[in-house]
Length: 426
Image 1 (cartoon, rainbow, N blue to C red):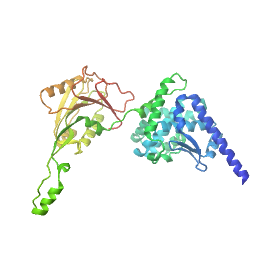
Image 2: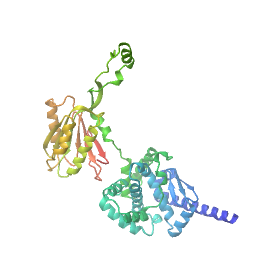
Image 3: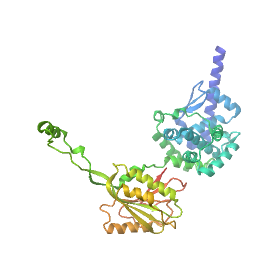
Image 4: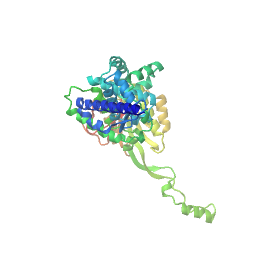
């Protein structure tokens, strides 16, 4: 028994030493990783049969570390960096929002791609050439190899059972058991976001280092950029007005029930049949119908807008929405006053244009409508576009929001006066 315990202790000590060396090797090769590595402490968990991380501790089975490193001497550094990158991109926090198997695999592929691209000799594995071949195919289909885009590709092009198992064999290094309940992770997504932003800043300082990765920068840009809820951004276009609904906030139930009890069916106070609320009423949606904007994407954007508009708490029953189609000139203007108008447009409306892109005609058209008192209280304009066009030189007298769908790796810049919003999905 003593001999068995002594052997176990030696294995634990050796595995711990291997992981410390792996950690030191990562820091030596990539100084910008020190902040993230400081958050993750290796913790032995005998009998677990895997390596797994909860955002603060990297749990490992010494038997697994020793067995894997005997086959692949660089595996310890590989799995350490793999786990650390998962945390930097806080992949665990997207687990509950996605289809779990696809998101788990997409996350593994994204971090393995970065590690291979970094070209670290101390982290190379013997079958990386096979991984590279798979990555080339994925990049053709998904574009930039961020977890989000790989996942989106899997949802559009489902994997076969054999194809999935092959990718798991090549790219899975750790277990994701702690991703099941991300709200219970020790370090929150906000804390990891700050660490990711720090790494992003440090990368610029260490940009001349020989070990660099465009995929690392792309993944950092993906996780650190601001995200918007389309419902929330529409609040910028809200105005105060009366809505025909019972106002419970200003209704006194005491006098109401007293009247009913004293005089039978004669309440002393009736509830108000309207209330003052802030909702969206007067605004314009401009659709870029140039050749670079696909009709299916524009249609999806309109359908998403309509779904939000149908929610009673967001819009007045009577509204004044203009859906304007514009490429290098205004092609059409459809006035929407209620749900039925919007449904008719979605069903029967046709997209017109498909020429060049010039944003100025739409703004000039809206300015003329304002001058002609078409709107009671115009709050702003939402322009759905790919962004490649001519912007107005002067700032308009209303909020202007340019909405991009995140399907292009490089979204163009907008003027300082414009609100730039990137939607993950339509």
